[in-house]
Image 1: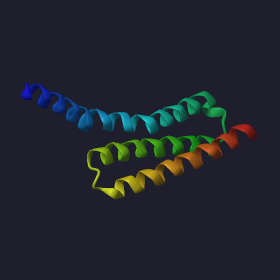
Image 2: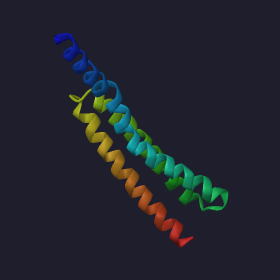
Image 3: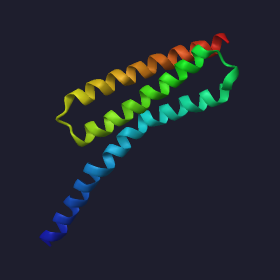
Image 4: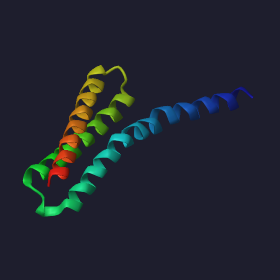
Length: 105
């Protein structure tokens, strides 16, 4: 009976160590995908600054996703969390500027 409960804790540990980083990284990854979808929709006729902002937006969110993934695996590396927060904020700012650019054009 003791082995059964130990097996459950190993499953929870497996989920905590391997599944949770993927789930955490998927949130900013989804935002990067949305930015790339908008970039594909506006196409080549959009102004270069708008395409640059959407590309920067996607790069910031993808880098944030990678940093969150590795921070979830190595929680003692506080610098990963700080850089991912800055990348996320930069991605949000770029996204906001791109939305204003889309409204203007």
